[in-house]
Length: 344
Image (cartoon, rainbow, N blue to C red; front, side, top):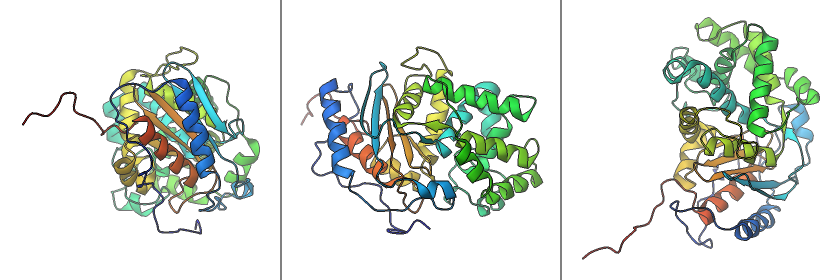
């Protein structure tokens, strides 16, 4: 479906030329981060592996050379390289922020029991994953789970639910986000599989509300326009215990942040999530427009965008860039160094 490299992982696992740092300590000074951002942009800008998401017609028309990387620390400083002002649809990255909204409203136990937290091991739009798990959506980062999550958003009407979603994601970004009408219409004409997922969940008693109405809400949330700069701030809000580091606004609680990051760590890159966590070591969420946001709790977040995707629907250049930065900046959550000399 995604062309070149289909079936093979592009999750980076060889950074032998990058000095290994560890996650203890803080981020380096601004000049070093700027240098690294420019380096990764130059290093991976000419990578042409992968293909556009042609199954959503409008996404198949995007310039494949676009590439942006941004990093926001929890102090609110944002540094960028590349096409950072280019707006693209947030797509599946929206799932983790809507999940945060629902967790904030309904609480840890209720949402875990209803939606689940385990990886399906299958594609993000799998029907089989539902059938094999007795109608349960399994986790909120696949499409079935995202539909079940959208149905739980507070609001008496579809319009109220949609507005609550838009306001929530805008609070994460620190600015008013708008929906891309062209992307919304293109997806609405081609999302028959999501409609089928919605009806299947309803048949199993796992969807609140009318399926096509919920699918429409989900389609709208995916069509919200963001930049790599926005993604860095949104991710940094999760890394900063729920406080937007730029506006100073508390968006969600620290407990909700913990839950979201845990689910994203194990499910954020779909069936490649285990490989990503093993090689790169930080929670990350991707979208088929080419965006990825990765969070280093207590430090900040990286937002990246490039529309060429691997066979799982994850941006090739964005994975490479974030992987490089994770190693160079010591973001891997599982890396550490002894604090005293070893004794004989």
